[in-house]
Each structure stands twice: as structure tokens, then as C-alpha cells.
Length: 319
Image (cartoon, rainbow, N blue to C red):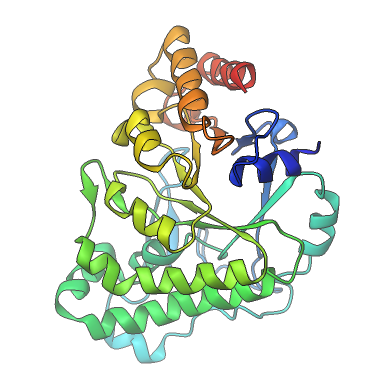
């Protein structure tokens, strides 16, 4: 059985022979899941280091991804002159067919954008504080900006669904440590319908939906399941509680989780890491599947090489 088949069985609760594993930023040869995405437009060159095609600029003071600045729509008066990137630009998808063929034995995921998706991308364009104020005071601005962001993604989705990917992935962080960044009513008004439309497009093409979100997003997990998320990537399981996730949502969606980065993976001992990995596999994967193990080297946040290797050893043992 190929890695691809094992991942499908885990997602579809069809009794995989072992727990599949995804590696994020190294050791990809050991990963059952592999990812690619659309490229920048052919010939596009950033005018300064870190600039994206959308016009905001990534800046980092250390080895982390950093933060965006130079937000092109911080001044709303510039909206009429703003030109988003062309999703159909030449060169954007040229490398994908050969890559899909090369990785045909693994589960292939593709990003729904050339950048982080949805809400996060809107805040990068407008500014976090400005966009949050718009949600409360200027719903017309919100709709117009989301039309730009989701319109680009929708076009990307339609294009990449023509290729032999298994899944389309979204990366949209919604949680603080203690709940959503917005009210549930606001989320359901502005975002749920847009996500539902995207997920329906993907399912109509015979692909799976994979959604990453950090923080405490418990209040919208049921919504995500209702509108068609197949894999929920939650890298802070302790925010929810592993048992709570299993009891409330086990068997309804496939979870992709790491050893909790904040509380165990970075500061933990070997015994703590092994016990945590075992619990993830046994509780979330106890539904004839339903769990994919996530491994990432977080040396940028203080993870030692020893802890990274313990996580690898633990997941491969209990898988």
C-alpha cells in the first residue's frame, strides 16, 4: 500500500495499516504527505526583499517567518487603484503537472493561494487593527476586500483542481489562546459562506479539503466539519484537550496534530513527548483512522535537535 493510499484510508476512516505522518520543513523523504503550490507570475520581481505579489512585505528579525508590513490598503482611499495579482498569470502553474507525476505515490496537497489564505491575507493587505475595525464599522469595506482575496483564491482553486492533486490546503489562523479573534456571528456572516463555496468547488473536483488554523478555534470546528473540511490541522492540541477533540469530533473529521509545540514539543522531556504522541495516535486515531501525525522542526522557537528526534522516534514508533 502506498503512502497515498494510507493517507486516504486515514481521512476516510477506512482502517489504515498505520498512522500516516506529514513532515513540514525537513526530512521530507519520510513524509506520507507532500505539498506544492502555485508559483509567482513569470517575470515578476519584488521591488524589495520580502515583498509579495499582493504588495505587502515580510520582515523578520530572527529565523521565524516574521510579520508583514507596508500594507497596501492601510489607507482605504487607495482601494480603487489597487490591482491584485493575476491568478492566471503565465508561469504560475507550469511546474505542477510534472511534480504531481513525480510524487504520485504520496498524498499530494496544493496551497489555495501563493500566500497565506483568507482572513489572514485580508489583514496583511489592510492591517490587522484596520480590518478588525472594518468588521465592526464598515461591512461594505469588508465585503469588497474579501471579494479581492477570495476571488484570487477561487481562481487558483479552479486552476489547481485541474491537476492531479489529492487535496487543497488553506492556512488561516483564527484563534487566540482563549477563543476566536472575532465573534462567532461575525465569522459566520462574512467567512463561513465563502469557505463553504470554496470547499464545494474542491469536492466537486474530487479533491479533499485540508484546513490549518492555530489557536483556540473550538467554537468553529463544528462549522468547518459541516461545510466540508476533511482534515483539520491543529498544532496546539492542549488548547482544546486531546480527549475533548476525540469525544466531540472523533470520527467526524480527520485531525492532523503535532505534539503540542507550546507546552510539550519545545520544553518537554523524552517521556513527556512519547506519552503525548502515543495519546494523540490512540485517541484521535481510534475511529478506524482519523489521525495524521505532524512533525516540524521548530528550532526557530527553541526546539532542540534532541527533542525533534524524540518526536520523530515517538510518532514512527506509535504509528
